[in-house]
Amino acid sequence: MYDWANSAFATTVMAGFFPIFFKQYWSHGVDVNVSTAQLGFANSIAGLVVALMAPILGAIADKGSYRKKFLICFTYLGVLMTASLFLVQKGQWAGAIFIYAAGIIGFSGSVIFYDALLPAVSDESDVDYISSLGYAMGYLGGGILFLFNVLMTLMPQRFGLSDAGQAVRISFLSVALWWGLFSIVAFIWVPEERNEGSASGIGRAVRNGFSEFMGTLRKIRHRKTLFLFLFAYWCYIDGVDTVVRMAVDYGLSIGFESNDLIVALLMVQFIGFPAALGFGKLGQRWDVKKAIFLAIGVYCLVTIWAMMMTHKHEFYMLAGVIGFVQGGIQALSRSFYSRLIPTDRAAEFYGFYNMLGKFAVIIGPALMGAVGLIVKRMMMPPAPTPDQIQTIGELASRMSIASILLLFIAGAVMLYFVDEEKGKEEIRFFK
Image 1 (cartoon, one colour):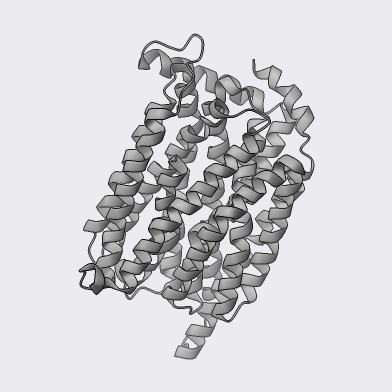
Image 2 (image 1 turned 180 degrees about the vertical axis):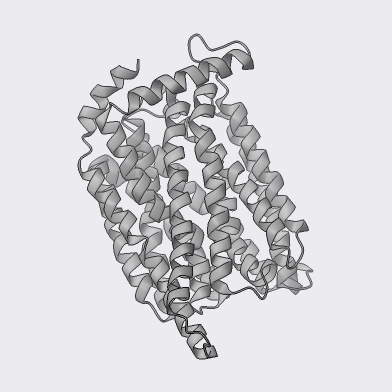
């Protein structure tokens, strides 16, 4: 149910309305490549903040059994920031970026401690399916609210609203309400196992957690399997998260209409629900690592296709393909990692896991933004015509998405060398 709750932010805000509203309302009149760079850098800065604090807070949460407390704190930071987007006025791009980045910190920070609860509600026989079920519920819950919000923007008068702009701002409030209310289910009913010798008091938890983190950091460099998987994950999840956060912005930059992009996102949500469940079963009955390879291969093809597409029906087709694999690669990566770590220190190790995921997000959007700006500046003549500006701007956007392909390839190569059985044997070195 926490996936059901927080996916409203990932879908309506992060992937859907914020990129469109930022480009057309808060950054009205700004060059499309500049606004893409602004959005990419905002994602990167927020990712850096989460990445730096994730493993240390995870270790503190483990030592003091504070996983749920940290989960609640980060959740309501994200809820408050999402609601605050309603107050940002037209042209105030800096304020929008700041609040959005703070919302991402709340969203991403909460996921560290949510992931750490996975071993408490599953074992090796069903962890792939339960992880996938969480993502599937996220696609369904996020999709239902997103559909409602899309209808508000398409038919604002029927909802008593003046225009689509007001509908989008109301949508931010609806996300905050949805996220805040449905999270309570997880806060109340999901158990948190108390570790033996848990610190009594936040002061001791901080000291012991930091000491534990430093010890783990020294050890993790010598555990080849875990290190390889984390590095592989760092690479390929970069591409996945960049697609999630930048796809709508990319579509706008190459000339597609915002309504077409929103419909495509809805397709991803409702295809993703059964597809994530299917990937969970695939991981149980076939092989988790092979299933992740399959998803990476699909993403490589999607990236090449996206670089060359020219018609909006292609964007719909790409959305459908992504819907089949997006939840699967996320869920199976999370459950595969759970096999390689000690369960009594799950928050700390998921802190490392999310740290690398967020460091990847630092690279991906920034890479897209930087490549787009560099290509445009290199190719733009001194006195360009309007047609040249449009043509070169579109080419720069296509080159920016092409850069993501390198990350999927690097991730697949590193994942090939990960040996699950050897990784399980290495767990004893962390005891």
